[in-house]
Image (cartoon, rainbow, N blue to C red; front, side, top):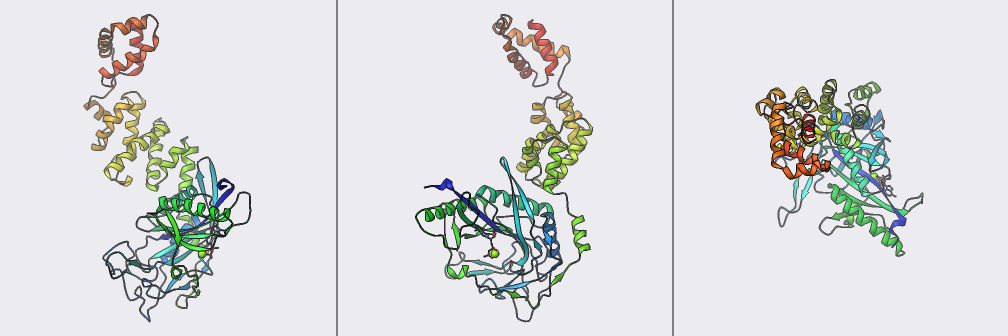
Amino acid sequence: MNYATYEPVIGLEIHLQLATQSKAFCGDDASFGGEPNTHVSAISLGHPGTLPRLNKRQMEYAVRLGLALSSRINLRNCFDRKNYFYTDLPKGYQITQDRLPVCVGGSLELEMDGYRRTVRLHHIHMEEDAGKSIHDLSPRHSMIDLNRAGVPLLEIVTEPDLRSGEEVDAFMTAMRQLARYLGISDGNMQEGSMRCDVNVSVRKKGDTGFGERCEIKNMNSMRFARQAIEFEVKRQIDLLESGGQVQRASLSFNPTTGETSPMRDKESAHDYRYFPDPDLPPVVITQPWVDEVLAQLPTLPKAYFERFVNEFGLPEYDAKLLTQEREMAVFFEKTIKVCASQNVSGKSVANLFINKISPWLAETGTEIDAFPVSAAQLSAYLQLIEEGKVSASIANQRLFPALVESPERPPLELAQQLNLLQSSDSNFLEKIVDEVLAANPDKVAEYRKGKKGLIGFFMGEVMKKSQGKAEPKATNALVTKKLG
Ligand code: ADP
Ligand code: MG
C-alpha cells in the first residue's frame, strides 16, 4: 500500500472549561466534582421562565485567550441556541455562539523537532457545557449529574493545518500551557477540562484540495488521540486505495480495540436549528476594556522561551522545560538574574532547576510556589560550586538535600558543618596522595614507564579517599609532582 504518498490533514475543535467561580449564565458553583446534582439551580435545571445572565469573567477569559493568540476581537458578539434533545441537557438547547463568535482568526506556532508549524485558528466562541450521563453505575438505569450543566466553555476551532498525531499532541500541549499561563483554565484532560474533536482527512502529497473528513469525537487523552489518528488515517487510505470513498461521519474511538467506529446517528445528527437566543441580547464590549485586558496579560511562554535562549544563552531544550509552567519560569528567571549578578553561569542554574529542583518537587508533591529555598540562597549555593569550594557531585548528593531541609541557613555554613568543603590544603592532600601511591606500587611503576593515562586512576582514588573533598586542580598538581 502506498501510505507514504498520502498526507493526513487534521483540524481540531477544542473545548476548554474555564476556571470561573460560577457558571456561564447563573450563579451556581462551577467547580469540578461535588456531590452529584448539588451545583444546580432552577436555571441550570432548565426550569421554564428562568432567564440566563452573562458571566463577565467568561467574556474576559475569552478575550484574554484571543489576545494571546492574536485573534481579532468582535466588539459585538452574540449568542445562539443549538437545539438537540438529550437527557443531560434539560433546556433542550445549548447556548453557544454561531454567527458572531467572540474571537476570529489568530494562530499558534508549534516548535516541532527540527521544524516549526504555524496553526491558524478559525475562531474561538463561548458556550456552556451539558451535564453528564453516567451509564455504568446502575445495571438498569442511566444516571444524570447536572453539576457540569452550564459550566462555561471556550471552543477553539483551528483551520485544517495539522499534519500528524505528533503535531496534534504538540498543539494541545501548547494550548494547555497557554491556558494555564493565562489563568483561565487548569487544562486538566483527565477531569475533562480540556478535550477535543479531531477532524481527519487524507490527500495525496502535493495536492492542494482537501479530502472528505471524519470527526473523532471527545478525545481527552493525547495518547488515545494519537492512536485514533493513526488508525483513522490508515483506514481512510486503505479505503481510497481499494477504490472506495470516505463518508463524512462522527466517530468514537475505542481504546480497548484501538479502532474508530461510527457513532449512533442520533448522537451525530447535525440538524441543530441554530437561531439567535432571544433571552440574551448581543454583548457589546469596548476597545478600552479590551486594551485593559491586553495590558494585564502575563508574559507568555514564547516570550520567556526567547528570553531564556537569547538573553541567558540556554539551550532550547532547557528553555522548553523551564517554561512549561508559568510559576516555574517566573522563579527561574528571578534566580538566574540573582545568579548572573554573582557571576554564576546560566547553564548551571538551569541544571540545578532541571536536575535537582524539578525532581525534588515531583518526589515531594510540592508546587514550585512552595519551594522553600529563595533565589538568593540558590545563588549562594551555586557560588560554592563555581568557586570550587564544594565539588558539584558532593553538592548534588549532600548539600542540596541539607539546604532544602534548612533553607534559611547560609550554604557555606551547612557545607562546613557537614564537612563537605573541598580542600587544597597541602597537608591534607599530601597525606592522602602518599597513601594512594603507596597502595598502588605497580600502577606507579607503569605510570613512570610512560602510561600517563593512569593519572585519571590516581585522581579517582584520591577523590574517593577524600570523600570528594580534594580540590581537583591542587590535587592534580600534587599527584603529577609526586609521580614525576
Ligand atoms: P462544520 O461547520 O461542518 O463543523 P467546519 O468548517 O466548522 O465544519 O470545520 C470543523 C473542523 O474541521 C475545523 O477544525 C476544521 O479545521 C476541520 N476541517 C475542515 N475541513 C477538513 C478536512 N478536509 N480535513 C480535516 N479537517 C477539516
Ligand atoms: Mg463546527
